[in-house]
Image (cartoon, rainbow, N blue to C red; front, side, top):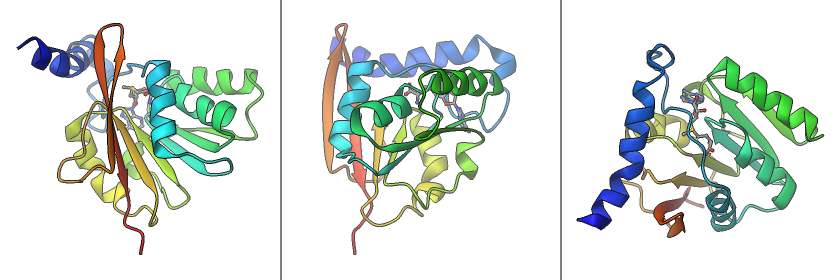
Length: 183
Ligand SMILES: C[S@@+](CC[C@H](N)C(=O)[O-])C[C@H]1O[C@@H](n2cnc3c(N)ncnc32)[C@H](O)[C@@H]1O
């Protein structure tokens, strides 16, 4: 019982946070509220994705940019963060500029549901399972061999090539890795 509550805690947190800024959550294209992935989980996501130097990562719903910044700084990858909220986009863009990462990290004010992922080697998600479902047509066009890594929320009916449970402050975080079929 205790374990299942822990597993559903992120769903409860997302739901509660989503209710607070109601005016921001009325956009039907909003796929999740702003809630960051802990840094140790970010590191594990990129490690499990096998992100290599020179590869291109997209974070759909990039929030404060921690995933794209980690991709550039620790993994020497190119990274694109897509963020729908203008206020978050502006502060993340400022953060990337102040870190001197503008050559390798691009922050886009846009909608994940309308993003062209043809250049992506790795896509990261921290959305909801229902949002992942809505993204399937976009993710389905990824090139063969590309990896999709989702924090806490599965992609229904896709078979993960790896899963890992990461404990942070006594709360389990799940990481799911999917790979597009290589032909
Ligand atoms: C749960 S946060 C994850 C932030 C970051 N990826 C991380 O893991 O730390 C989700 C983010 O997605 C953004 N978002 C929600 N719907 C979106 C959409 N349709 N397109 C782009 N960004 C979106 C939210 O504003 C929020 O910043």
